[in-house]
Image (cartoon, rainbow, N blue to C red; front, side):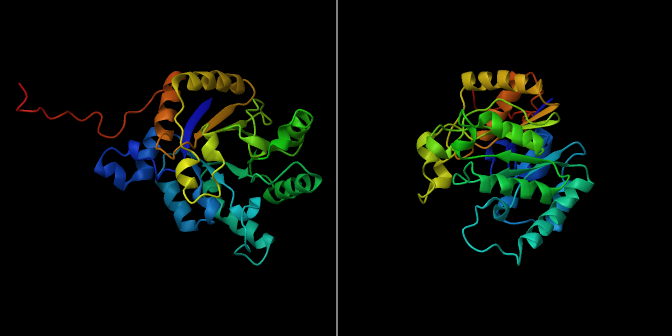
Amino acid sequence: MITIGLTGWGDHDSIYTTREAGKQKLVTYGKLFRTVEVDSMFYAIQSKRNMEKWTAETPADFRFVVKAFQGMTGHSRGKIPFDSEDEMYEAFRLSIGTFEQAGKLTAVLFQFPPWFDCSKENVAKLREIRARMDDVPCALEFRHQSWFQPVMRERTLKFMREERWIHSVCDEPQAGTGSVPIVEQATDDSLTLVRMHGRNASGWQSANQPNWREVRYLYRYDAEELREWAERLRRLEQQSKEVIVVFNNNSGGDAAGNARELMGLLGQDVPKLPGEDEPQQLDLFEF
């Protein structure tokens, strides 16, 4: 099974085509897609109230991929807003508990920064995190090329299988050591995650620029690129029971459109956007 969704639901203006849809974004989103990545959790561990609200606003078969809090992946440059790592993980586990109890948690995504290279220290860190998360399904995404250099690729994949890490396969610009290639391999029989970041190489290197959020994921996949990915996904589907695809190329608002295009290429039902079924008013002055 291949399930397609987006990162977040708030910024995809192209799918909120009526006033009512814009007022109830997650409700609308849940009618168009069956999964979403909760990227807001990366910036702050969400309250139980928010998690309960999001659970209630989505269909029974809807599921969430939750991005791990930045303090858990080493992105935080300053002191974490907790007295200890134990407290941080406890707060995170408590937050995702609402999704777990509702059967709506697919996995927690641990995306590590470009400076998290393949080293004994970082391998030990991954083991520690996996032990802390216990039985929670966890996906792993690297941003440092060293993990998938030819000499390390198979060892990395073997480690992920042994430590129960779900592989997050990436499509991203090939822009030096701070990016990884497409590695078309599952490490878990139940799930593989695919994240579509776009291929804007110049924007990928803009992290220190004031407008980096506007340009880093500025990319629209063309039809040929999506056809190539449709074939990859079918191959990955032979390795995992489910493949979840998340489009993150939304600097220019392209994620939703590309996701819906890919659904069509895969022969999936593509739900109509809000208002598409409504009759159009005739122009009385057109002759």
